[in-house]
Image 1: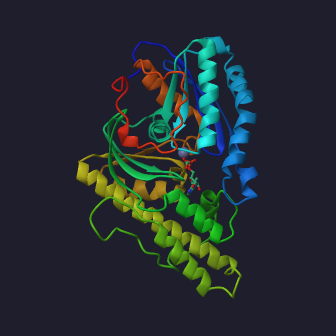
Image 2: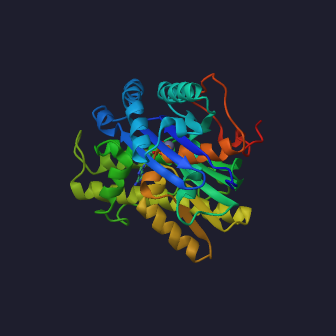
Image 3: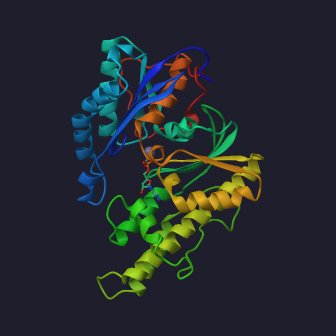
Length: 352
Ligand code: KG4
Ligand code: ZN
């Protein structure tokens, strides 16, 4: 896909609460990757505070760029292009990465490219030693999105279904908050679920009893709220084992629902390859239940290593590189699109 052309791309990710920077070489692969997570700062407030996120990106981004260049012994003048996350995400946070990337590219006289954050997630498994082959079904599960996408090639995306309310990651985070688990809730809830009994509470598997590939996760929050109410005294939380059991039941319901819809999508599109991407694809229970379900049908599931499931600069450098190689670039007007439908993208070079 990368052809003979060699290109070294700096990738910059600042769409939410992680400052991610990486350098990807079209011939040699990933050369350097660094991440600064603001999670600790936002934990105090129980969620991301957008203004604080922007300010922290401003502080961290240049030192991180300097660090990745040093990591691979490169000068900034050896870069051939810069890719930055232009959306979807928090407006102020996106503008930090976009401004810096565009100014740096202007100074270095190299092309700059606005990358779609979810395309970055979707292509992250391509950074692994045995990447998936096109065509495939992608399940994108992050804090802001839950989408099933039919992927013919880079940039050829057809949306098959999506969440009508909360995203899967958002449902994890909100449920964790109700149970007084620290931000970021998803991984905490998953860890707590390990000590719980799956069978004790039977959560619904929303929208699985009717045809279609859309999701709805907000009902699971209400179910959790009622369980908390039923198993605790007023204004308190249930006992520790009950909290573990609620986490286990909740996680099992989300995972089962995702598995059912993935199988349905693969069958509908007559495909055998599934890719899961985005923060929730780091979930161990989701990975193992998908392996089980797909192996029995001679189908295969692919995902990125843990650190490339959640937000990172490597996926942006990789996705940007595919498009920069095809001659795509943006002008000096900085692009920041808090909302940006994934299926409006075109294959590399075609948008030009
Ligand atoms: O992709 P990501 O880093 O950011 C967005 O683009 O939104 O995804 C973050 C989301 C959060 O909701 C987080 O709680 C969830 O992914 N997450 C998990 C796990 N790790 C991260 N959810 C469930 N289990 C996990 N192990
Ligand atoms: Zn993300």
